[in-house]
Image 1: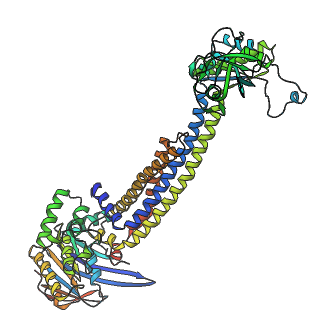
Image 2 (image 1 turned 90 degrees about the vertical axis):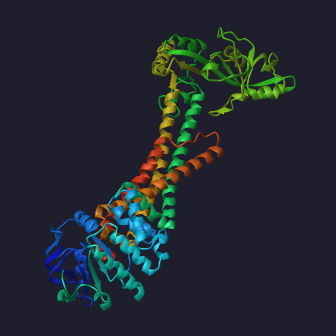
Length: 226
Length: 402
Protein backbone atom coordinates (compact mmCIF):
# COMPACT_ATOMS: atom_id res chain seq x y z
CA UNK A 1 0.00 0.00 0.00
CA UNK A 2 2.83 2.36 0.92
CA UNK A 3 5.73 2.08 -1.49
CA UNK A 4 8.80 4.30 -1.20
CA UNK A 5 11.53 3.84 -3.78
CA UNK A 6 14.88 5.58 -3.58
CA UNK A 7 13.40 8.37 -1.50
CA UNK A 8 15.83 11.00 -0.24
CA UNK A 9 15.24 14.20 1.66
CA UNK A 10 17.80 16.87 2.28
CA UNK A 11 17.55 20.26 3.94
CA UNK A 12 19.48 23.44 3.54
CA UNK A 13 20.70 24.50 6.96
CA UNK A 14 22.65 27.70 6.64
CA UNK A 15 25.10 27.05 3.83
CA UNK A 16 25.24 23.36 4.62
CA UNK A 17 23.30 20.63 2.90
CA UNK A 18 21.97 18.18 5.48
CA UNK A 19 20.65 14.87 4.26
CA UNK A 20 17.94 13.47 6.51
CA UNK A 21 16.98 10.49 4.37
CA UNK A 22 19.14 8.59 1.91
CA UNK A 23 17.66 6.34 -0.77
CA UNK A 24 14.99 4.75 1.35
CA UNK A 25 13.19 1.77 -0.17
CA UNK A 26 10.25 0.68 1.91
CA UNK A 27 6.91 -0.96 1.34
CA UNK A 28 4.21 -1.34 3.92
CA UNK A 29 0.97 -3.29 3.40
CA UNK A 30 -2.46 -2.75 4.91
CA UNK A 31 -2.59 -4.14 8.43
CA UNK A 32 1.19 -3.95 8.87
CA UNK A 33 2.45 -2.93 12.30
CA UNK A 34 5.76 -1.16 11.88
CA UNK A 35 7.93 0.57 14.42
CA UNK A 36 10.77 2.88 13.48
CA UNK A 37 13.52 3.26 16.03
CA UNK A 38 16.84 4.99 16.03
CA UNK A 39 18.82 7.78 17.68
CA UNK A 40 17.81 11.44 17.44
CA UNK A 41 18.56 12.89 14.05
CA UNK A 42 18.48 9.53 12.35
CA UNK A 43 15.61 10.70 10.13
CA UNK A 44 12.73 8.75 11.63
CA UNK A 45 10.45 11.76 12.03
CA UNK A 46 11.32 12.99 8.56
CA UNK A 47 10.34 9.61 7.19
CA UNK A 48 7.08 9.73 9.09
CA UNK A 49 6.32 13.24 7.80
CA UNK A 50 7.05 12.10 4.26
CA UNK A 51 4.69 9.15 4.56
CA UNK A 52 2.10 11.51 6.08
CA UNK A 53 2.43 13.88 3.11
CA UNK A 54 3.41 16.73 5.41
CA UNK A 55 6.73 16.86 3.60
CA UNK A 56 7.95 16.09 0.08
CA UNK A 57 10.91 13.95 -0.90
CA UNK A 58 13.84 15.71 -2.58
CA UNK A 59 14.10 12.73 -4.90
CA UNK A 60 12.52 9.32 -5.30
CA UNK A 61 8.97 8.12 -5.76
CA UNK A 62 6.26 7.69 -3.16
CA UNK A 63 3.21 5.60 -4.07
CA UNK A 64 0.19 5.38 -1.81
CA UNK A 65 -2.62 2.95 -2.63
CA UNK A 66 -1.13 2.49 -6.08
CA UNK A 67 -1.18 6.20 -6.94
CA UNK A 68 1.91 8.37 -7.22
CA UNK A 69 1.60 11.00 -4.51
CA UNK A 70 5.12 12.42 -4.83
CA UNK A 71 4.21 15.61 -6.64
CA UNK A 72 0.69 16.43 -5.54
CA UNK A 73 -0.17 20.07 -5.01
CA UNK A 74 -1.27 21.41 -1.66
CA UNK A 75 -4.97 20.87 -2.29
CA UNK A 76 -4.52 17.24 -3.41
CA UNK A 77 -2.08 16.49 -0.60
CA UNK A 78 -4.59 17.80 1.91
CA UNK A 79 -7.30 15.61 0.42
CA UNK A 80 -5.12 12.49 0.69
CA UNK A 81 -4.21 13.37 4.28
CA UNK A 82 -7.84 13.88 5.09
CA UNK A 83 -9.02 10.60 3.60
CA UNK A 84 -6.18 8.14 4.14
CA UNK A 85 -3.89 9.27 6.92
CA UNK A 86 -4.33 9.68 10.65
CA UNK A 87 -1.79 11.29 12.96
CA UNK A 88 -1.11 10.74 16.64
CA UNK A 89 1.47 13.07 18.17
CA UNK A 90 3.67 12.96 21.23
CA UNK A 91 2.21 16.22 22.55
CA UNK A 92 -1.35 15.24 21.59
CA UNK A 93 -1.95 18.46 19.61
CA UNK A 94 -5.49 19.00 20.75
CA UNK A 95 -7.04 22.42 20.10
CA UNK A 96 -7.13 23.83 23.63
CA UNK A 97 -10.35 25.84 23.31
CA UNK A 98 -12.40 22.98 21.86
CA UNK A 99 -14.11 20.24 23.85
CA UNK A 100 -13.04 16.61 23.48
CA UNK A 101 -16.01 15.93 21.21
CA UNK A 102 -15.25 18.93 19.01
CA UNK A 103 -11.59 17.93 18.75
CA UNK A 104 -12.67 14.50 17.52
CA UNK A 105 -15.11 16.12 15.12
CA UNK A 106 -12.47 18.40 13.60
CA UNK A 107 -11.30 16.17 10.68
CA UNK A 108 -14.93 15.37 9.85
CA UNK A 109 -15.77 19.06 9.81
CA UNK A 110 -12.77 19.88 7.64
CA UNK A 111 -13.82 17.12 5.21
CA UNK A 112 -17.27 18.70 4.93
CA UNK A 113 -19.25 15.76 6.30
CA UNK A 114 -22.84 16.73 7.16
CA UNK A 115 -23.45 17.56 10.86
CA UNK A 116 -25.91 14.72 11.48
CA UNK A 117 -23.43 12.06 10.37
CA UNK A 118 -20.63 13.79 12.25
CA UNK A 119 -22.64 13.57 15.41
CA UNK A 120 -23.28 9.83 15.15
CA UNK A 121 -19.63 9.13 14.31
CA UNK A 122 -18.33 11.26 17.18
CA UNK A 123 -20.76 9.67 19.64
CA UNK A 124 -19.60 6.22 18.56
CA UNK A 125 -15.92 7.19 18.87
CA UNK A 126 -16.43 8.71 22.32
CA UNK A 127 -18.12 5.47 23.32
CA UNK A 128 -15.34 3.29 21.83
CA UNK A 129 -12.60 5.17 23.62
CA UNK A 130 -14.47 5.44 26.93
CA UNK A 131 -14.73 9.20 26.72
CA UNK A 132 -18.51 9.63 26.73
CA UNK A 133 -18.53 11.37 30.12
CA UNK A 134 -15.60 13.55 29.07
CA UNK A 135 -17.17 14.74 25.81
CA UNK A 136 -17.63 18.34 26.92
CA UNK A 137 -14.32 18.67 28.75
CA UNK A 138 -11.63 20.84 27.30
CA UNK A 139 -8.14 19.29 26.89
CA UNK A 140 -6.81 21.04 30.01
CA UNK A 141 -9.48 19.27 32.03
CA UNK A 142 -8.36 15.83 30.81
CA UNK A 143 -5.55 13.55 32.00
CA UNK A 144 -2.67 12.69 29.67
CA UNK A 145 -4.11 9.28 28.85
CA UNK A 146 -7.51 10.76 28.13
CA UNK A 147 -5.95 13.38 25.89
CA UNK A 148 -4.12 10.77 23.87
CA UNK A 149 -7.35 8.75 23.62
CA UNK A 150 -9.08 11.84 22.22
CA UNK A 151 -6.19 12.22 19.77
CA UNK A 152 -6.49 8.59 18.65
CA UNK A 153 -10.25 8.91 18.29
CA UNK A 154 -9.66 12.01 16.18
CA UNK A 155 -7.03 10.23 14.06
CA UNK A 156 -9.41 7.36 13.34
CA UNK A 157 -12.54 9.44 12.76
CA UNK A 158 -12.05 9.49 8.98
CA UNK A 159 -11.26 5.71 8.90
CA UNK A 160 -7.73 6.21 7.60
CA UNK A 161 -5.75 3.44 5.91
CA UNK A 162 -2.52 4.57 7.58
CA UNK A 163 -2.05 5.68 11.15
CA UNK A 164 1.17 7.48 11.94
CA UNK A 165 2.18 7.80 15.57
CA UNK A 166 5.17 9.95 16.53
CA UNK A 167 6.30 8.97 20.04
CA UNK A 168 2.68 8.37 21.11
CA UNK A 169 3.75 7.39 24.63
CA UNK A 170 6.47 9.99 25.02
CA UNK A 171 4.46 12.22 27.36
CA UNK A 172 2.73 9.43 29.27
CA UNK A 173 3.63 7.25 32.25
CA UNK A 174 4.22 3.54 31.76
CA UNK A 175 0.72 2.33 32.56
CA UNK A 176 -1.15 4.83 30.41
CA UNK A 177 1.46 4.42 27.68
CA UNK A 178 0.69 0.73 27.58
CA UNK A 179 -3.01 1.44 27.48
CA UNK A 180 -2.51 3.76 24.49
CA UNK A 181 -0.39 1.18 22.66
CA UNK A 182 -3.12 -1.41 23.20
CA UNK A 183 -5.66 0.92 21.63
CA UNK A 184 -3.39 1.50 18.63
CA UNK A 185 -2.78 -2.20 18.23
CA UNK A 186 -6.52 -2.82 18.10
CA UNK A 187 -6.55 -0.74 14.92
CA UNK A 188 -4.05 -3.06 13.27
CA UNK A 189 -6.62 -5.81 13.52
CA UNK A 190 -8.91 -3.60 11.49
CA UNK A 191 -6.36 -3.62 8.65
CA UNK A 192 -4.97 -0.17 9.41
CA UNK A 193 -1.28 0.18 8.65
CA UNK A 194 0.22 1.42 11.92
CA UNK A 195 3.60 3.11 11.91
CA UNK A 196 5.05 4.07 15.27
CA UNK A 197 8.17 6.17 15.70
CA UNK A 198 9.68 5.72 19.14
CA UNK A 199 12.76 5.86 21.31
CA UNK A 200 11.34 3.31 23.68
CA UNK A 201 12.45 -0.26 22.85
CA UNK A 202 9.58 -1.63 24.97
CA UNK A 203 7.11 0.14 22.68
CA UNK A 204 8.98 -0.49 19.43
CA UNK A 205 9.58 -4.13 20.30
CA UNK A 206 5.90 -4.93 20.14
CA UNK A 207 5.69 -4.27 16.40
CA UNK A 208 5.75 -7.11 13.91
CA UNK A 209 8.24 -5.19 11.78
CA UNK A 210 10.92 -3.19 13.53
CA UNK A 211 12.99 -0.79 11.45
CA UNK A 212 16.18 0.68 12.81
CA UNK A 213 17.49 3.88 11.34
CA UNK A 214 20.89 5.52 11.56
CA UNK A 215 21.95 8.59 9.58
CA UNK A 216 18.98 8.58 7.23
CA UNK A 217 19.22 4.94 6.30
CA UNK A 218 17.28 1.88 7.37
CA UNK A 219 20.08 -0.24 8.79
CA UNK A 220 18.17 -3.32 9.84
CA UNK A 221 14.74 -4.80 9.92
CA UNK A 222 13.61 -7.42 12.35
CA UNK A 223 10.31 -9.29 12.36
CA UNK A 224 8.33 -10.46 9.41
CA UNK A 225 6.73 -8.46 6.66
CA UNK A 226 3.30 -9.82 5.84
CA UNK B 1 -15.92 22.39 4.83
CA UNK B 2 -19.28 24.10 5.10
CA UNK B 3 -19.57 27.85 5.53
CA UNK B 4 -21.52 27.45 8.73
CA UNK B 5 -18.69 25.29 10.11
CA UNK B 6 -16.13 27.88 9.06
CA UNK B 7 -18.11 30.54 10.89
CA UNK B 8 -18.56 28.36 13.95
CA UNK B 9 -14.90 27.43 14.09
CA UNK B 10 -13.93 31.10 13.75
CA UNK B 11 -16.39 31.89 16.52
CA UNK B 12 -14.76 29.37 18.84
CA UNK B 13 -11.40 30.99 18.30
CA UNK B 14 -12.90 34.41 19.00
CA UNK B 15 -14.47 33.06 22.18
CA UNK B 16 -11.16 31.42 23.03
CA UNK B 17 -9.48 34.78 23.57
CA UNK B 18 -12.19 36.92 24.99
CA UNK B 19 -10.28 40.06 25.95
CA UNK B 20 -8.59 40.27 22.56
CA UNK B 21 -11.95 39.87 20.83
CA UNK B 22 -13.67 42.43 23.05
CA UNK B 23 -10.93 45.00 22.51
CA UNK B 24 -11.05 44.56 18.75
CA UNK B 25 -14.83 44.82 18.70
CA UNK B 26 -14.54 47.93 20.85
CA UNK B 27 -12.08 49.55 18.45
CA UNK B 28 -14.25 48.69 15.47
CA UNK B 29 -17.46 49.83 17.10
CA UNK B 30 -15.99 53.15 18.23
CA UNK B 31 -15.05 53.79 14.62
CA UNK B 32 -18.48 52.92 13.31
CA UNK B 33 -20.26 54.79 16.12
CA UNK B 34 -18.24 57.94 15.49
CA UNK B 35 -19.08 57.86 11.80
CA UNK B 36 -22.75 57.47 12.64
CA UNK B 37 -22.81 60.19 15.30
CA UNK B 38 -20.74 62.73 13.41
CA UNK B 39 -22.62 62.37 10.16
CA UNK B 40 -25.89 62.48 12.09
CA UNK B 41 -24.79 65.78 13.61
CA UNK B 42 -23.79 67.21 10.23
CA UNK B 43 -26.96 66.00 8.62
CA UNK B 44 -28.96 67.37 11.57
CA UNK B 45 -27.41 70.79 11.10
CA UNK B 46 -28.20 70.67 7.39
CA UNK B 47 -31.81 69.65 7.95
CA UNK B 48 -32.15 72.29 10.66
CA UNK B 49 -31.16 75.00 8.22
CA UNK B 50 -33.38 73.58 5.46
CA UNK B 51 -36.33 73.43 7.84
CA UNK B 52 -35.74 76.98 8.97
CA UNK B 53 -35.76 78.14 5.40
CA UNK B 54 -38.87 76.28 4.42
CA UNK B 55 -40.66 77.65 7.48
CA UNK B 56 -40.14 81.02 5.83
CA UNK B 57 -42.20 79.90 2.88
CA UNK B 58 -41.83 77.67 -0.14
CA UNK B 59 -41.02 78.62 -3.73
CA UNK B 60 -40.11 82.00 -2.35
CA UNK B 61 -38.47 84.83 -4.23
CA UNK B 62 -37.29 87.96 -2.48
CA UNK B 63 -37.30 91.29 -4.25
CA UNK B 64 -35.56 94.23 -2.65
CA UNK B 65 -34.67 97.68 -3.81
CA UNK B 66 -31.14 98.51 -4.90
CA UNK B 67 -28.78 96.35 -6.83
CA UNK B 68 -25.55 94.96 -5.58
CA UNK B 69 -23.37 94.37 -8.58
CA UNK B 70 -20.26 93.72 -6.57
CA UNK B 71 -19.69 93.24 -2.91
CA UNK B 72 -18.67 96.13 -0.75
CA UNK B 73 -19.66 99.80 -0.72
CA UNK B 74 -20.67 101.15 -4.11
CA UNK B 75 -19.79 104.69 -5.19
CA UNK B 76 -23.48 105.61 -4.98
CA UNK B 77 -23.44 104.99 -1.28
CA UNK B 78 -20.43 107.22 -0.77
CA UNK B 79 -22.23 110.02 -2.62
CA UNK B 80 -25.22 109.61 -0.38
CA UNK B 81 -27.40 108.23 -3.13
CA UNK B 82 -30.11 105.82 -2.25
CA UNK B 83 -31.55 103.41 -4.75
CA UNK B 84 -34.93 104.14 -6.21
CA UNK B 85 -37.53 102.81 -3.89
CA UNK B 86 -39.84 99.94 -4.62
CA UNK B 87 -43.44 101.12 -4.60
CA UNK B 88 -46.64 99.35 -3.76
CA UNK B 89 -47.66 99.57 -7.41
CA UNK B 90 -44.40 97.90 -8.40
CA UNK B 91 -45.31 95.05 -6.12
CA UNK B 92 -48.82 94.81 -7.54
CA UNK B 93 -47.42 94.81 -11.07
CA UNK B 94 -45.56 91.59 -10.33
CA UNK B 95 -48.86 89.74 -10.26
CA UNK B 96 -49.04 90.13 -14.03
CA UNK B 97 -46.53 87.33 -14.40
CA UNK B 98 -48.25 83.98 -14.96
CA UNK B 99 -45.51 82.28 -12.97
CA UNK B 100 -46.22 84.24 -9.82
CA UNK B 101 -48.95 82.96 -7.52
CA UNK B 102 -49.09 85.65 -4.90
CA UNK B 103 -47.05 88.48 -3.50
CA UNK B 104 -46.77 90.24 -0.19
CA UNK B 105 -45.19 93.68 0.01
CA UNK B 106 -43.32 94.29 3.20
CA UNK B 107 -42.59 97.50 5.05
CA UNK B 108 -40.84 97.39 8.34
CA UNK B 109 -40.35 99.92 11.08
CA UNK B 110 -40.48 100.25 14.78
CA UNK B 111 -42.95 102.15 16.81
CA UNK B 112 -44.35 102.59 20.27
CA UNK B 113 -47.45 100.51 20.96
CA UNK B 114 -49.64 101.53 23.84
CA UNK B 115 -52.82 100.40 25.44
CA UNK B 116 -54.03 102.44 28.38
CA UNK B 117 -50.97 102.91 30.54
CA UNK B 118 -48.98 100.04 29.08
CA UNK B 119 -46.58 100.73 26.28
CA UNK B 120 -43.54 99.19 24.64
CA UNK B 121 -41.43 99.39 21.53
CA UNK B 122 -42.43 96.96 18.79
CA UNK B 123 -41.43 96.03 15.28
CA UNK B 124 -44.27 96.98 12.98
CA UNK B 125 -44.69 95.03 9.78
CA UNK B 126 -46.81 96.48 6.99
CA UNK B 127 -48.09 93.87 4.61
CA UNK B 128 -51.15 92.42 2.93
CA UNK B 129 -53.46 89.48 3.50
CA UNK B 130 -51.38 87.13 1.33
CA UNK B 131 -48.43 87.30 3.71
CA UNK B 132 -50.09 84.77 5.97
CA UNK B 133 -49.95 82.10 3.27
CA UNK B 134 -46.60 83.06 1.80
CA UNK B 135 -44.79 82.99 5.12
CA UNK B 136 -46.66 79.91 6.38
CA UNK B 137 -47.79 81.71 9.46
CA UNK B 138 -50.85 80.69 11.40
CA UNK B 139 -53.44 82.58 13.37
CA UNK B 140 -54.07 82.03 17.05
CA UNK B 141 -57.24 84.05 17.37
CA UNK B 142 -59.39 86.22 15.10
CA UNK B 143 -58.33 86.88 11.54
CA UNK B 144 -55.41 88.21 9.53
CA UNK B 145 -55.36 91.45 7.56
CA UNK B 146 -58.43 91.70 5.29
CA UNK B 147 -57.98 91.10 1.58
CA UNK B 148 -58.90 93.91 -0.78
CA UNK B 149 -57.32 97.11 -2.01
CA UNK B 150 -53.69 97.26 -0.96
CA UNK B 151 -53.88 101.02 -0.88
CA UNK B 152 -56.55 101.13 1.78
CA UNK B 153 -55.04 102.08 5.09
CA UNK B 154 -57.60 100.47 7.32
CA UNK B 155 -56.75 100.91 10.96
CA UNK B 156 -56.59 97.30 11.97
CA UNK B 157 -53.70 95.31 13.35
CA UNK B 158 -52.66 91.78 14.15
CA UNK B 159 -50.56 91.22 17.27
CA UNK B 160 -47.84 88.74 17.96
CA UNK B 161 -48.62 86.29 20.77
CA UNK B 162 -46.17 87.85 23.22
CA UNK B 163 -47.36 91.41 22.54
CA UNK B 164 -50.94 90.34 23.24
CA UNK B 165 -49.90 88.70 26.50
CA UNK B 166 -48.06 91.78 27.64
CA UNK B 167 -50.82 94.21 26.74
CA UNK B 168 -53.92 92.23 27.56
CA UNK B 169 -52.82 89.57 30.03
CA UNK B 170 -55.49 86.90 30.07
CA UNK B 171 -58.00 88.81 27.91
CA UNK B 172 -58.18 87.88 24.22
CA UNK B 173 -57.66 91.48 23.09
CA UNK B 174 -59.74 90.98 19.93
CA UNK B 175 -61.72 94.09 19.13
CA UNK B 176 -59.76 96.28 21.52
CA UNK B 177 -58.05 99.45 20.35
CA UNK B 178 -54.33 100.05 20.69
CA UNK B 179 -52.28 103.06 19.76
CA UNK B 180 -49.32 102.76 17.38
CA UNK B 181 -47.42 106.00 17.14
CA UNK B 182 -50.08 108.63 16.56
CA UNK B 183 -52.75 106.35 15.15
CA UNK B 184 -55.30 104.07 16.73
CA UNK B 185 -55.68 100.52 15.49
CA UNK B 186 -58.33 97.93 16.22
CA UNK B 187 -56.96 94.47 17.08
CA UNK B 188 -58.52 91.94 14.69
CA UNK B 189 -56.28 88.93 15.18
CA UNK B 190 -53.53 87.33 17.25
CA UNK B 191 -50.75 85.29 15.67
CA UNK B 192 -50.17 81.83 17.08
CA UNK B 193 -46.92 81.48 18.93
CA UNK B 194 -44.28 80.20 16.52
CA UNK B 195 -41.10 81.13 18.22
CA UNK B 196 -38.05 82.32 16.43
CA UNK B 197 -37.26 81.46 12.86
CA UNK B 198 -34.09 82.66 11.18
CA UNK B 199 -33.63 85.26 13.86
CA UNK B 200 -37.03 86.77 13.31
CA UNK B 201 -39.48 86.43 16.15
CA UNK B 202 -43.09 86.59 15.00
CA UNK B 203 -44.24 86.63 18.61
CA UNK B 204 -43.02 90.17 19.11
CA UNK B 205 -44.35 91.95 16.05
CA UNK B 206 -47.44 93.90 15.12
CA UNK B 207 -48.76 93.53 11.58
CA UNK B 208 -50.77 96.32 9.96
CA UNK B 209 -51.93 96.91 6.37
CA UNK B 210 -49.02 98.10 4.25
CA UNK B 211 -50.70 101.40 3.41
CA UNK B 212 -51.27 102.07 7.09
CA UNK B 213 -47.61 101.35 7.77
CA UNK B 214 -46.62 103.80 5.05
CA UNK B 215 -48.67 106.49 6.71
CA UNK B 216 -47.36 105.57 10.13
CA UNK B 217 -43.74 105.83 9.05
CA UNK B 218 -44.39 108.49 6.45
CA UNK B 219 -42.79 106.60 3.60
CA UNK B 220 -43.96 105.07 0.35
CA UNK B 221 -41.17 102.59 -0.33
CA UNK B 222 -41.14 98.90 0.39
CA UNK B 223 -38.51 97.13 2.42
CA UNK B 224 -39.00 93.92 0.46
CA UNK B 225 -41.51 92.11 -1.68
CA UNK B 226 -42.11 88.45 -0.95
CA UNK B 227 -43.05 86.64 -4.13
CA UNK B 228 -44.36 83.11 -4.23
CA UNK B 229 -43.99 81.26 -7.51
CA UNK B 230 -46.78 78.96 -8.70
CA UNK B 231 -44.62 75.88 -8.16
CA UNK B 232 -41.04 74.76 -7.91
CA UNK B 233 -40.55 74.57 -11.66
CA UNK B 234 -41.73 78.13 -12.24
CA UNK B 235 -39.35 79.70 -9.70
CA UNK B 236 -36.81 80.60 -12.37
CA UNK B 237 -39.35 82.10 -14.79
CA UNK B 238 -40.99 83.98 -11.93
CA UNK B 239 -37.61 85.43 -11.06
CA UNK B 240 -37.00 86.48 -14.68
CA UNK B 241 -40.50 87.95 -14.98
CA UNK B 242 -40.10 89.92 -11.77
CA UNK B 243 -36.79 91.38 -12.95
CA UNK B 244 -38.26 92.26 -16.32
CA UNK B 245 -41.47 93.82 -15.00
CA UNK B 246 -39.57 95.98 -12.55
CA UNK B 247 -36.94 96.99 -15.07
CA UNK B 248 -39.67 98.17 -17.44
CA UNK B 249 -41.44 100.02 -14.65
CA UNK B 250 -38.21 101.68 -13.56
CA UNK B 251 -37.53 103.11 -17.00
CA UNK B 252 -35.24 100.35 -18.11
CA UNK B 253 -33.00 100.56 -15.11
CA UNK B 254 -32.30 97.36 -13.30
CA UNK B 255 -32.24 98.69 -9.80
CA UNK B 256 -33.77 95.85 -7.84
CA UNK B 257 -32.28 92.64 -6.60
CA UNK B 258 -34.22 89.42 -7.03
CA UNK B 259 -33.05 86.42 -5.08
CA UNK B 260 -34.63 83.01 -4.93
CA UNK B 261 -34.72 81.43 -1.55
CA UNK B 262 -33.68 78.20 -3.22
CA UNK B 263 -30.38 79.74 -4.23
CA UNK B 264 -29.64 80.73 -0.66
CA UNK B 265 -30.83 77.38 0.59
CA UNK B 266 -28.80 75.47 -1.98
CA UNK B 267 -25.65 77.24 -0.85
CA UNK B 268 -26.26 76.33 2.77
CA UNK B 269 -27.17 72.83 1.71
CA UNK B 270 -23.90 72.43 -0.19
CA UNK B 271 -21.78 73.82 2.61
CA UNK B 272 -23.35 71.64 5.26
CA UNK B 273 -23.29 68.54 3.11
CA UNK B 274 -19.59 69.06 2.51
CA UNK B 275 -19.14 69.49 6.24
CA UNK B 276 -21.01 66.25 6.94
CA UNK B 277 -18.83 64.39 4.45
CA UNK B 278 -15.71 65.89 5.98
CA UNK B 279 -16.52 64.88 9.56
CA UNK B 280 -17.70 61.48 8.33
CA UNK B 281 -14.40 61.06 6.51
CA UNK B 282 -12.43 62.00 9.59
CA UNK B 283 -14.39 59.43 11.57
CA UNK B 284 -13.71 56.85 8.87
CA UNK B 285 -9.99 57.29 9.54
CA UNK B 286 -10.59 55.80 12.96
CA UNK B 287 -12.06 52.80 11.17
CA UNK B 288 -8.88 52.43 9.17
CA UNK B 289 -6.94 52.57 12.43
CA UNK B 290 -9.19 49.82 13.77
CA UNK B 291 -8.39 47.86 10.62
CA UNK B 292 -4.66 48.11 11.27
CA UNK B 293 -5.35 46.99 14.82
CA UNK B 294 -7.20 43.96 13.49
CA UNK B 295 -4.27 43.14 11.25
CA UNK B 296 -1.83 43.41 14.13
CA UNK B 297 -3.90 41.21 16.39
CA UNK B 298 -4.52 38.68 13.62
CA UNK B 299 -0.79 38.45 12.99
CA UNK B 300 -0.23 37.79 16.68
CA UNK B 301 -3.03 35.23 16.57
CA UNK B 302 -1.35 33.47 13.66
CA UNK B 303 1.96 33.23 15.47
CA UNK B 304 0.22 32.12 18.67
CA UNK B 305 -1.67 29.44 16.84
CA UNK B 306 1.11 28.07 14.68
CA UNK B 307 0.68 24.60 16.19
CA UNK B 308 -3.04 24.65 15.61
CA UNK B 309 -2.51 25.62 12.00
CA UNK B 310 -0.03 22.77 11.62
CA UNK B 311 -2.54 20.40 13.14
CA UNK B 312 -5.34 21.56 10.84
CA UNK B 313 -3.06 20.94 7.90
CA UNK B 314 -2.19 17.47 9.17
CA UNK B 315 -5.90 16.75 9.58
CA UNK B 316 -6.47 17.53 5.93
CA UNK B 317 -7.08 21.27 5.67
CA UNK B 318 -5.60 22.74 2.48
CA UNK B 319 -4.09 26.23 2.49
CA UNK B 320 -7.26 27.77 1.06
CA UNK B 321 -9.26 26.51 4.01
CA UNK B 322 -6.82 27.88 6.57
CA UNK B 323 -7.08 31.22 4.79
CA UNK B 324 -10.85 31.02 4.91
CA UNK B 325 -10.82 30.36 8.64
CA UNK B 326 -8.73 33.43 9.41
CA UNK B 327 -10.78 35.48 6.97
CA UNK B 328 -13.96 34.37 8.67
CA UNK B 329 -12.54 35.51 11.99
CA UNK B 330 -11.81 38.98 10.67
CA UNK B 331 -15.22 39.23 9.02
CA UNK B 332 -16.95 38.11 12.20
CA UNK B 333 -14.96 40.58 14.26
CA UNK B 334 -15.65 43.55 12.04
CA UNK B 335 -19.25 42.44 11.52
CA UNK B 336 -19.94 42.27 15.23
CA UNK B 337 -17.95 45.47 15.66
CA UNK B 338 -20.07 47.33 13.16
CA UNK B 339 -23.33 46.08 14.63
CA UNK B 340 -22.24 47.12 18.12
CA UNK B 341 -20.99 50.39 16.66
CA UNK B 342 -24.32 51.03 14.97
CA UNK B 343 -26.15 50.42 18.23
CA UNK B 344 -23.74 52.70 20.12
CA UNK B 345 -24.04 55.31 17.40
CA UNK B 346 -27.83 55.23 17.43
CA UNK B 347 -27.80 55.54 21.22
CA UNK B 348 -25.48 58.51 20.86
CA UNK B 349 -27.82 60.05 18.31
CA UNK B 350 -30.78 59.52 20.63
CA UNK B 351 -28.91 61.19 23.49
CA UNK B 352 -28.03 64.18 21.31
CA UNK B 353 -31.62 64.38 20.09
CA UNK B 354 -32.70 64.47 23.74
CA UNK B 355 -30.19 67.16 24.66
CA UNK B 356 -30.90 69.35 21.62
CA UNK B 357 -34.50 68.73 20.59
CA UNK B 358 -34.33 71.54 18.04
CA UNK B 359 -31.70 69.71 16.01
CA UNK B 360 -33.18 66.97 13.79
CA UNK B 361 -30.26 64.52 14.22
CA UNK B 362 -30.50 61.28 12.30
CA UNK B 363 -27.68 59.45 10.62
CA UNK B 364 -28.25 59.47 6.86
CA UNK B 365 -28.64 55.98 5.39
CA UNK B 366 -25.62 56.42 3.14
CA UNK B 367 -23.43 57.11 6.18
CA UNK B 368 -24.68 53.98 7.94
CA UNK B 369 -23.98 51.90 4.84
CA UNK B 370 -20.59 53.53 4.35
CA UNK B 371 -19.62 52.90 7.97
CA UNK B 372 -20.54 49.21 7.77
CA UNK B 373 -18.87 48.82 4.38
CA UNK B 374 -15.70 50.55 5.59
CA UNK B 375 -15.47 48.46 8.73
CA UNK B 376 -16.08 45.18 6.90
CA UNK B 377 -13.76 46.32 4.13
CA UNK B 378 -10.89 47.22 6.43
CA UNK B 379 -11.47 44.08 8.45
CA UNK B 380 -11.20 41.89 5.38
CA UNK B 381 -8.46 43.91 3.72
CA UNK B 382 -6.24 43.89 6.78
CA UNK B 383 -6.75 40.18 7.38
CA UNK B 384 -5.51 39.20 3.92
CA UNK B 385 -1.88 39.28 4.91
CA UNK B 386 -2.23 37.40 8.24
CA UNK B 387 -4.47 34.81 6.59
CA UNK B 388 -1.98 34.23 3.79
CA UNK B 389 0.80 33.95 6.29
CA UNK B 390 -1.14 31.31 8.19
CA UNK B 391 -1.97 29.41 5.02
CA UNK B 392 1.64 29.36 3.87
CA UNK B 393 3.07 27.84 7.04
CA UNK B 394 4.94 24.61 6.51
CA UNK B 395 3.02 21.89 8.37
CA UNK B 396 6.10 20.14 9.77
CA UNK B 397 7.65 23.23 11.30
CA UNK B 398 4.23 24.49 12.36
CA UNK B 399 3.48 21.28 14.23
CA UNK B 400 6.81 21.56 15.99
CA UNK B 401 5.74 25.05 17.04
CA UNK B 402 8.71 26.67 15.42
